Image 1 (tube, chains in turn cyan, brown):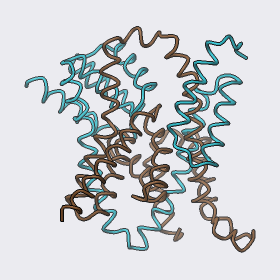
Image 2 (spheres, rainbow over the protein chains, first blue to last red; image 1 turned 30 degrees about the horizontal axis):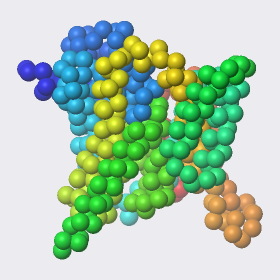
Image 3 (tube, rainbow over the protein chains, first blue to last red; image 1 turned 90 degrees about the vertical axis):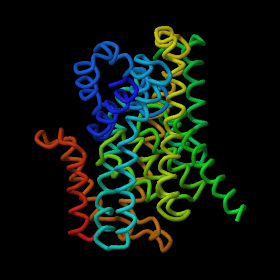
Length: 180
Length: 207
């Protein structure tokens, strides 16, 4: 198979097999991309993953773009990315259609009432996990608290918080403020 | 006729732009897109905050990266509200491409100077500030999910009473928290299992 369809199909497969994205994707990438295709080494994959986490956007997409780019330049990156999002497009469109069609039924609404309670806990757990990695000293604790409060009580776009926090990080780390 | 067409073109361009912005500024993966989706719900009226909450569950329980799933779902709903299946599918495609375009551009740029990017002092220090801020944004989103699903804020209009608490929801949330954090046998289970179980509880208790 030529390389572009191969990239597309391999990443489509990764997309289908990933539930929840992010870290859930890593073992599947290891099997498909490192073991089966030999497109990247284990170390390269870890590097891409680490950078994918701290660059904007969805981690799965970032990692796919990296590997595709490494194989076949810009077009390779684009093919891999389209591959990884393709299953979502099909599955979610079908599902959204079904949900919209049945949303007037009482039991469907009750089910989502229960599901939204579960979502509360899923987000809470995600925040606790992220806190351990991102709040590492007093300045980061203050940044976390200020952003959380301001974001909750104002309707400012998150864009401003992201830009301000990046600037704060650069200033704190480079202006001789001692680490606490 | 042409004015309807141009209105629709503008809608889809704006959909692309809004998701492009989300893809560009949401740092730290799928969950980081949630605050942007709330902001979009408030500002555009394309979908409600409750749609976002439902979407998180759908995104978690279907194959594919959660951030991409949520973008597809929102795009679909937005297009469907504009009229019919073709618009819904167009909306799903436009929102998804909007979300991934900045990632692709940024990664293609970074890939050309990979090593120096990781070790750059300014990049590193920017992320020192970005990570807690991203967590803060997600925490604020989490707080509003909790407030809107475990409490009935509208009852406060008649003064504080026990009707403020969504007891069924609070009990279910407490059970789920224990199962996902404290019980060894269940805490490693995939979220889809808890989502499915919560749906059943929701139906049985009429939540």
